[in-house]
Figure 1 (cartoon, rainbow, N blue to C red):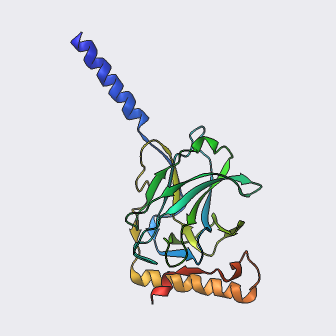
Figure 2 (figure 1 turned 120 degrees about the vertical axis):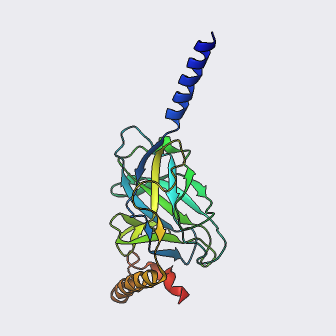
Length: 231
């Protein structure tokens, strides 16, 4: 009887361990924080498009990286949304979870409880800014020009390549995924931050000068602010 009981307990423990395994990751960024951005007004979005590639596994964790102590020293957090695809654009909002940042400079995660609603092949995970600048948390980006980035301004969505990859990830599975796979997550040096900002600022100002009234280029002076505000 004692031997049988031990075997049953071991099998149960193994089953629980399997149920608690980390899942598969969706991400485009390279893991290195090189700059960060914020809207002047809260409620707007930074988003990344993904394609479901893991069969019946549903996205159950949403993650993002913000920069520590900028634009202020208080973490306001962000609402992390999932949107279905509608004709190549973000469609219905499938729900959101509040992500309470605590450290910055690393990926932080929140469990997505409405994962069963995410059924389209393409989908979007979005960081919705809480609070107006400077009382908000910024969206971290890497140094590469993002090819799957979207911005959402006052309900209007636009694809954009002006920024590095938005540091937004999502994951299947039951266990808090942590930093996940790929290169080690780290912050760039101060010199690298300034260089990245100068390059992006030049690109954005050039488009604003040539197409000042196009909200898909530069939304109505509700400008993105970056690390350059610090120097």
